[in-house]
Length: 384
Length: 155
Ligand SMILES: [Zn+2]
Image (spheres, rainbow over the protein chains, first blue to last red):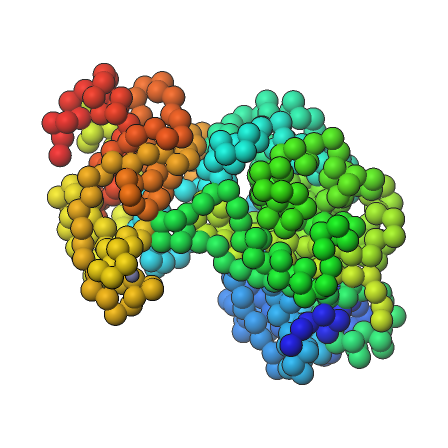
């Protein structure tokens, strides 16, 4: 059973906050839920499916209780920051199977104001990883170093990804880093884990977001335009028993699955919303999704290719996680929300891609040097 | 300064040695690196586990390695997090054992030593944690040269 055309994203809300010391993570979920439902023209009583991930305080039962939801479909997929891209696809599957007709996806957290969520001490991998100081930047730095070694990728090419995101963030009044940066600034910013500099990293923000996914029948009753779900794919890439390869991501599997289901190719995509935890994440993901050949990502992103609205492949037009927002250290939700804005024609006019018909969203959850969940989704502005 | 002193640059991280990996942890305590090898296909997965995913009914043998490896990728972490907050700079790496798996680890370097991909390194164990001895790797320069001379008198 395909999910092509089986459901629409008709509500999308990104919390405007970036530093939220005075409300709880639960309250962020609630404000996002109500924001997305209002955007769709729906209310809590319409919701019959609910999807959250690992950052949801108390899990799905506590959050359903807090929000006052009565649901008949539940999903708690946790593949890190890519979870929400997956969950939209899971909601579409559930809708196609008749398990629900109005699915709500919420996320939120406060890594800026509160504690980061710890890795559970019970994972079989913990004794073989926790002793080594495998921080997020260090993990992505290992992948960047190997990519440079095999393909000649440079720090300047990595920096070009940040520059593109920053050019877009200038137009986003809510962006945490609302300032254009130069390649020189990125490569001269302090090393966090070489070869990655501070400006190769995403921002750390509080906040959250929510999405409402509905059946075609519900969609036709509503006044709001949305994004039609065309296809999706998900995958886990891991250490493969020691045959680990740091030069690619799980997008090599999730991407082709999504393109095949949607019946389109990379050349058909008008705008991409790619989880940009670090600059290297974007370069590897672009290669893995087939927007350029393996190893060519560094050269591909130069000369404004990612700049909206006129670049060859406008990317992360809200400023992405690199500059706009990275709530709960999880980027998949905000990537999806910006793709919906583009398809509705509601992105900032300075970055709105003309005649935007097809958008690709991709999430990478986890670590490039060990294991990750990857989720790709293709969305269309078709109403029918 | 020997290997034991070189390890002091890393924080002590307690680990839980799960019972099914007792052969690994008891070898580690003796400073020996062993891998679980499938008796059918010869696979030696990392992290170690007492089964082969392809041949789950096959006998798994614990075999000793020479502990020689080469650097597959590395980074000098300038800003450690959590228990590594005060340990920067330190080297996080993925090394490839000779004819074996790639392993996430730390590399102990000599002062001002520049690392490169492909550089040989050797296994050393950090015995400070009560729960289990932690596998790290050391460069030849750090092992034999000053100021780390005497490393061979360690474990
Ligand atoms: Zn086997």
